Length: 83
Image (cartoon, rainbow, N blue to C red; front, side, top):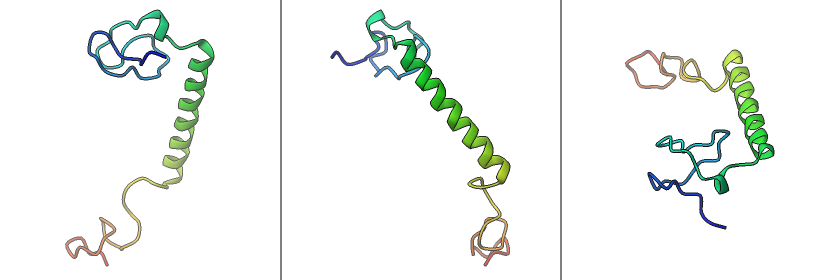
């Protein structure tokens, strides 16, 4: 199979629901366009990642500050009152 490379910018084409190069916007040749089934799988994966991100943000897990050392940066750096 031929490698999926944009004819305009010469970058590898990303698997996307859009029928254009994600770097330069050039429409991609018909032979490189993804099937509707593949596009739907990409949409589902994106939706699932977004749900997980929102759940993580809502619960406070995995997003910045507050953990561990007791100071503002969470480290024993001495300048923020930590550790």
